[in-house]
Image 1 (spheres, rainbow, N blue to C red):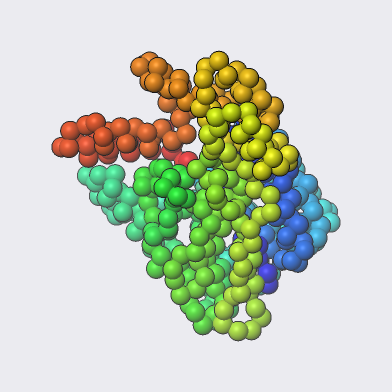
Image 2: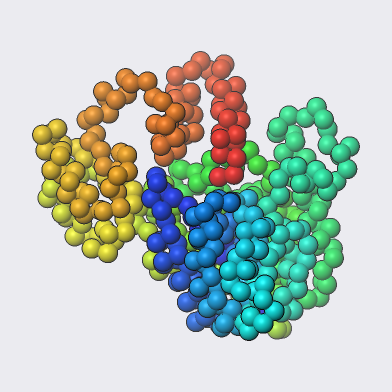
Length: 410
Ligand SMILES: [Mn+2]
């Protein structure tokens, strides 16, 4: 039984207003389908966040567009399992089943599309899969009795309690599997101990707002082939444990902070005999180039374009800082847009460094703040630098709460 574990597709996501469908549906997803077919996997598991946003037209369109790669997999006899992430909705998955033609009894596909939208166990081709979709505090507290929760609790202690409930639920499911047969656990959310940053930048800066699953609630039997397939954190990474435990990470770079990131999928083989799964991290071949360059002259721009090559320039996103005299800027700016067509129309994607000091005196409005790459980090460093020592902690806590409200799930 061979599984391709992927997660966090975020179909429908934009970068500063630029639609990323060409990157995700035009390259990353077809590349994943190719790998799945070539490697003859039995199951493609998307461990949550297939879609970026719920209930809007572009997402319905995305679901329509997903039907082609999904049909290709199902026709090739590959099963697909979609775990519900915090960005997904069960009706949308159902819509996708309709788009693919699975609501019709005579679809003729050799594979099946499985929607994993509750905390249960599903058996696919003999593999026991414990699935835990992303659960909000309200959903978790419905599962257990209210007296389990301390009404006077702070956000932090509530998160701790929610984490405890989640651990409890996960361990209860774990007890229900047949312990002499291979098993996989898939969860969309944070496992304590996972890291969230590439370089010094975090991917999803509200992680600390969320509750976490404890690593000891995961599968751990090293005498039976077991694997923990995680989603939600955009960075592909292995967690410590007695059985392989991986976040597959996102399938493309989503912002400039991820420009060094290598989007990947996991290939996991549950052998018919033996005690361990075999697994391999496969890097996706065509990640989107993200720029973060400073240039001074047209010659430097030409050299950069030569080094990257035409195709990479055509696809590139990111930012070009131009450090030049005002008189030269217009010309360089035009050439930059010609070289990197996707940067056109994006505020500050191409900008002249010397204009910063004058702009800084303007009162920032909320639109400017939202367009900052990482407003939370900007405000956080401002507080740390400029506020009195005794007030810093309180302000940082307040900021964390505001961030949680503004960016509830990203
Ligand atoms: Mn997520």
